[in-house]
Length: 341
Image 1: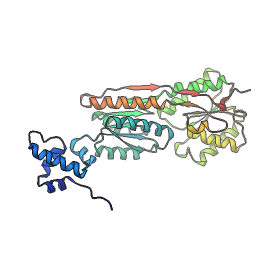
Image 2: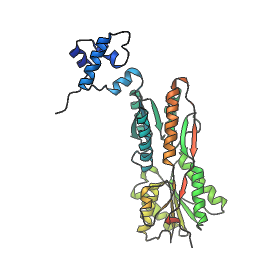
Image 3: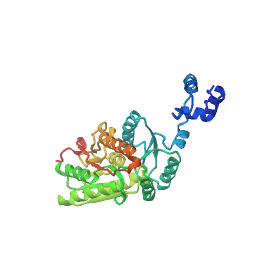
Image 4: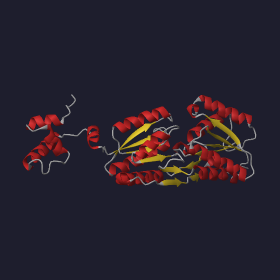
């Protein structure tokens, strides 16, 4: 049988004191207002019955909930999940809890979640922004709410961000493949105007240009990126570009789809085509052959997010410092980009 939750009014009734008296004592506002005897009596009873305050109600009363929102494209994605685990631990060590949510990159869902979290009086936001939420981000900044954009950002808003330098990371990934002997490298990417994908696209384009090679592009809509339709598009791209000797995938889930397609087509990796993924995944070390990837420094990214967030939480009333952090990823060479003979 579920134990009945004890409320402030239950404590007041049992001890024959007012609800206001109990509230003052529980919120450390009793000194100088209430006698030591009554304070001790309430505190002893609260300890005895194991009373736990309603944190949401407390946040609504005080304007502080000791909670931080971590809102990303998909919390189940291995990259975002890895970040989430680290920031949850560090936040807890500092007396804060993390509320996790996924937007599925849908603006309306993101806006609805922001409204809900605002009603709950959360203290800060770490957001992977969807398209078309500039005004909502600007409102948070205007209201002096600690806010950090993660993984992608807006160039024209004065707001802190922590991101990978996608351009440099993609550029050196492609150069790695070129140095291994690949001369006709195709890019399979998302069809997106968001900063992280634009950076990866431009890094690829500049690398093939600087090495006097030809670009070969396939862009896939995010909404179908993990469906059979995407597999069909990758299959057609490979078939229609018979001279390709390597593929660079702009996300790990596109890479997994591409590897599946290559195996279905009977293509050998790296014998027929070299393969590299932007953003590593644990499974890439288990596949045969193992898959080369651009690894994002998860621990460093998470530490930067936490550092900036607590810096802002401490200074929220005095104006939020805008801190922009960009970090380069690391090329992890594995069997899928062995030197082409």
